[in-house]
Image 1: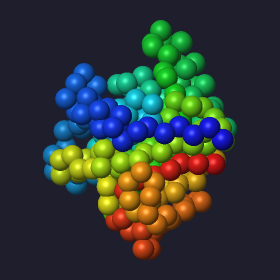
Image 2: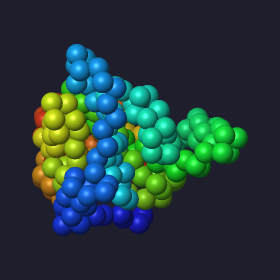
Image 3: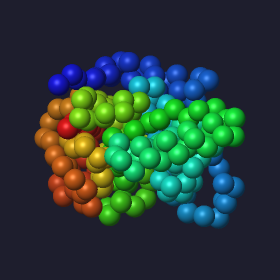
Image 4: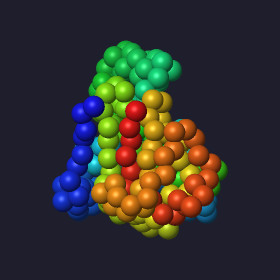
Length: 202
Ligand SMILES: [Ca+2]
């Protein structure tokens, strides 16, 4: 199986660039300052670009399509049908054809899939059936609640995407003790608030 691995140096460069450059993380505010700062972010493997919204994954999916022309799809039959539908709509309306980002898995700050949320995704349509994807430094992956915070040592539940497993490691660069989530995990036991790197694999 071909491994796709970003070096930590490359990741650091990409994140710094995305925070200060043209690819800065985009935050789509819904202006409801009274609401709890529930946020959902996406991070793309190939670009390391982060995009966040207030709200849940449904809100994220809608805003990504509307503002970024990116269709966030699950790599299953329904996801592909949704993508085809979005592209058909774009053709009909003369809009930009959406790019597809495929879900590798979702991580949550709270147990039972709650709190701040980050959706790891890739441009590879076959996701974990053909490739593996690693985030070797979760300190370079961000979500948003009370300001920006990195994901390192904060993940408390996970939901692998279709065809993927999520291996969580205590240390960066996929080292140290590993917790293998082969399906949804509403709590992580000893791995709670410990993960510092992630590997998505088939
Ligand atoms: Ca947590």
